[in-house]
Length: 468
Image (cartoon, rainbow, N blue to C red):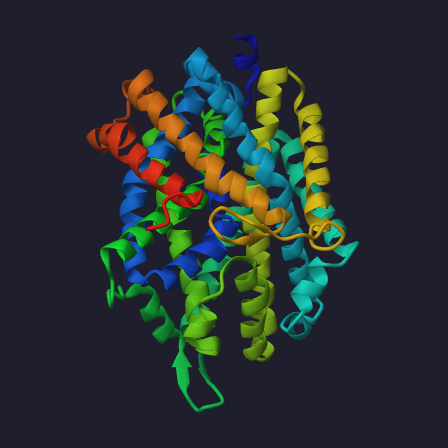
């Protein structure tokens, strides 16, 4: 009890919402959401994503934030406090950010590299074939930029909940939102004539993005889109990573939790949608439909620099704005990932924030260096259960995202839905006098629908269910 009284908290709901939204608005929104939307029939993916965000995402987000505030604990210890026999679920929940943090910081270093390239007028070189591969396979530079990004994240976490996480979110998130809106509006206004004389415009790309394409859609195809949208929600809402439990533990007891959760949902869905508006029209305009097939690092670090180069002089400015925005998004997400681990160490081992942060920084640095070496000295190829060929970064990403996150989410649904019962979460949300909207929906989702969908997603992710 003594430790709970000492526990820091967000100064208000705005700080919590911005910090949680900052966690949710990360690389997954920027390089994965647009690709999935383009691949999965545009508007069809958007509609399913929105429905899932208001049902499935709402359920998991509400559950994790409420668990955090009720227990005033981090993910490593919160589950054990809810039910002593379920403490092991907290270990899995804490493992996710431990695994993600090293490679996320490596990618953060890549973003720093490209921002520097565009700021110094080397945007055209960054668009050349082989530039990205040449950079990530280098011996020293990726490790140096990993350190730059990691130490920036660690500095914010060192400063604590109020002076670090909350204060940085209040500065970074408004700037990030302005950059996203500015780039999205610009993306809609562009047009380009290719070598064959075909004229393509940003508005045509926007129509591809928002208008459902049901041509040739089968039941199997529909389920593929559904599972893609559901897997994206993990990234978009930062659930099943322990993050929202950590942030929830810093929310004051008199805060309107239901209202804050709704605001996080709206903010995140808006930015995810705008990420598509930023990227899909621009890529379509300059590279056609073929260019929209790229995802992940190849979209951000290969395809988009080519798009910026094709824009001419304005492309350098847009490239600077874009990679600055990506850096802000990566920073806020990495801060939340690190905080989930740091708070877990503090609660479990009763160490100071500084000591816990130093330990996690060392772990992330060692892991990050190994990831960097995975592209040169330690390079190998490994086939994952889903058929993808992977290096070290891909293996870590697969273990955390495809295996552990669905397991944590399934365990959470079983614990809350059937062991301690949904009323525990509902009462926590409503204890400040507010009413939990979608209450009946929440009970049905946490007990029946969400576990079934998550089991299907897990089986597909690990390659067991290949028919979908």
